[in-house]
Image 1: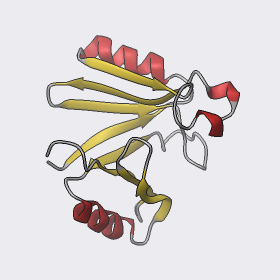
Image 2: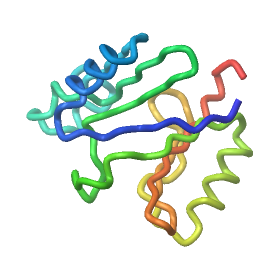
Image 3: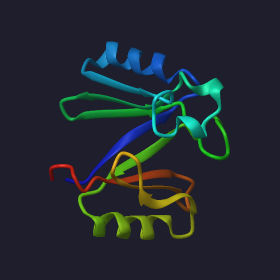
Image 4: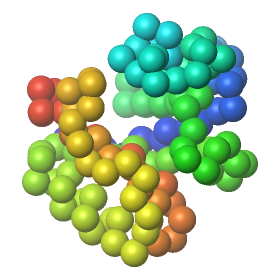
Length: 139
């Protein structure tokens, strides 16, 4: 099933923020640090304890976050993205092509270490989108 979820970016305090949201909303919190991840060697040692990816799930709520920032750095106002989880390879390719038209591609569609096709862009209205399709997920 295709879904849109909020994805928040933080400036080194993702762990604190996501724990706060868990206290407020309840649910299951999963945190993956940069240290021990497949991209650890590509990152400066100073960020090894920062959060690569966090997800808070409760019923139909999925709130995601990270301390990772785009090439423009952390700027108030660019700290939220729409994360679109797609239901097929055709769908992700179509959505990526049409939604990114006239915008700026930040991370082209490609298979990532977690096994999904993933890409990031800012659309022509300045909205950041993160598209993901996991071929192995139950549809």
